[in-house]
Each structure stands twice: as C-alpha cells, then as structure tokens.
Length: 262
Image (cartoon, rainbow, N blue to C red; front, side, top):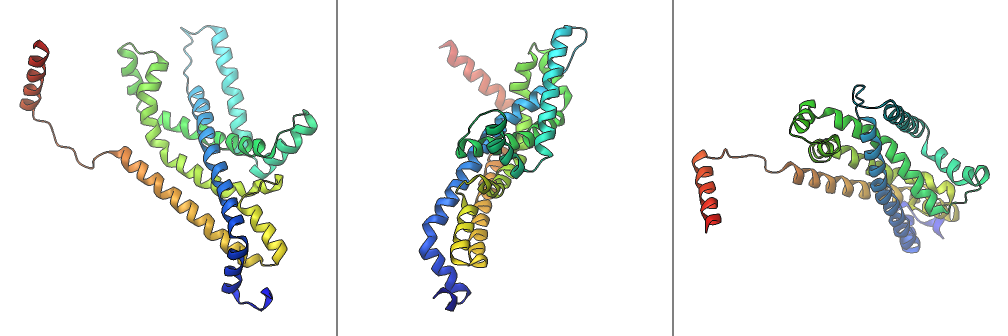
C-alpha cells in the first residue's frame, strides 16, 4: 500500500501513524539537551574558575600551590579528553565500560545525562576561562584595592561581565546538544533519531522519515536560537543612554536627605 504512494503522501502517512512517537522522541531530545547543558555549564564554570585562580609564591604556602596545581592539572586532562574524543565513544565507554571495568551499572537515562553533561562541561570550561581572561585585569585589581577577596571579586565583578561574553557559547552548546543527542541511540535512548531508525526500519521509508526528523530538529534549533537572542538583547539593556544632569542629581540627593530627616 505505502509503496503506491508518492513522496508527500508517504510523509503524511508516517505522521498519521507515528506522529506521537516523533513528538515523544523530540521531547526526550529536548529534556536531555536542556538539562545536560545546564549541568554542563555548572561544571564548566567550576573548572574555568579554578583554572584561572592565580598563584602567589610570596603569600601562598607550598602545600596550597601544590594542591591548586594538582586540581588544575586534573581539570586540564578532563577538558582535553572529553574535547578530543567523540561523544558516541564516550557514551559507549561510560554505559558499557563502567559496568565491565568498575561494576557500576548506570541506567540509560543516567548515562545519557552524564555523557552530555560532562561533554558540555569540557567545552564550557574553556569558554569560561576565556571569558574571565577577556575581562580587563584592572577590574580585579580595583576590586582587591577596595578590600575584596579573590572570591568576592570573582563573584561580584568578574563573572557577571564574563557571563555576558560567553552567553553566545552557552546557546551554541545547547544547539549542538539538541543535535548531538542523536548519538545516544547507541545506548538505546528513545530520542528523535532512535524513533527515526525504528520507523524507517519498519516501513522502509528512510528518506521520508529522515525528512520529518530533519525538519523537527531544525524547528527545535531555530526556536532555541531565537530565545537565546532575546535573552542576549535583554541583557544588553537600552541601545542609547542619556547623560544625567549634575543639577538633577544634586536635587535628587537633597530631596532624599530631606526625607530621611523627616
């Protein structure tokens, strides 16, 4: 029956028969991508901040310098390993390898979130490090000059500026994760690509099913890009600023002072 249909009729038929399955697969893809990107950003911020902690040979003890160097080395190895290997290999290694080597049996969902999160964290670590370095060093010096500790200066002065610089990269990682979760079908995660393989294998409609899936991936990534651009514009603030009149500022301060006296 389906062999007698033309291309568009077969697409309509697949949507009628498997539309719910496609939507469920897309939902799974979005959940894994969004949650893992969020967790990966946290990992990346921690790794990026630690990698930029300065070492003062005059003030820091030898033990503190040695510990910091060891932690930074561990994070550097982590970043290189997970940026230098494909996510599909990482998924196989974590899901099957941990079970055989360490006797740690992870569920499919646990493995999926873990793989995508630590992969994203490795890329975000370098983005955060670059974002922190891009902030003028005078900002940190000025913060310390008024009595802030390194942690206080980082949290209140440096990171807010760095976050704005790396926001596009966060959005880029989200879009990449929406697409790259397709490799998780190798550990039987029923995402959108897994549904495509199942439908195509059952109905022998590889091109038609791939067309549906491609359009669904495109819709998800375009919507994510649009939302992130809106977020960036909200963070930019107004396009133009008016200079304040010194007389107006003085009048406002006098008015507030009078109200306090009352």
